[in-house]
Image 1 (tube, rainbow, N blue to C red):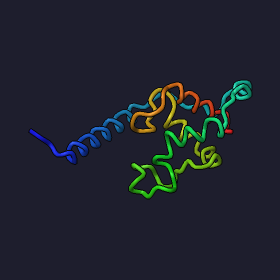
Image 2: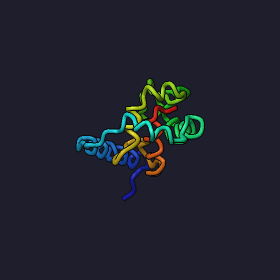
Image 3: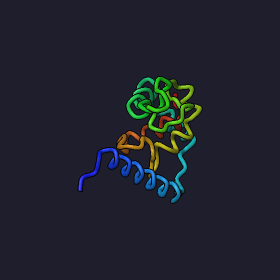
Length: 129
């Protein structure tokens, strides 16, 4: 029995949606750090220029860019665009919650390594400077 590509894509999308909903409903005790101790942030070398901008370009702006029309954003809300450090700072708690920790959901397909996610958590917790 052969299935059309459209049907397979639809079924996979539905299964992924159900899986995300189930995992989200499970809850977790994880709360991203809103900040790190001053000493840790003083030692951090991460900046927007040497880390944040490239991370956002590689892993986020494929969907979170004002240059993309709604149908090309893979469901990303049109009001969440990660194109400048000021906006990223404002959205840092949400970004950390969705993209770091033990069960990150962003980006939704594949994504950065655990080490890269840890760097993102550090950068955001230190004020995304």
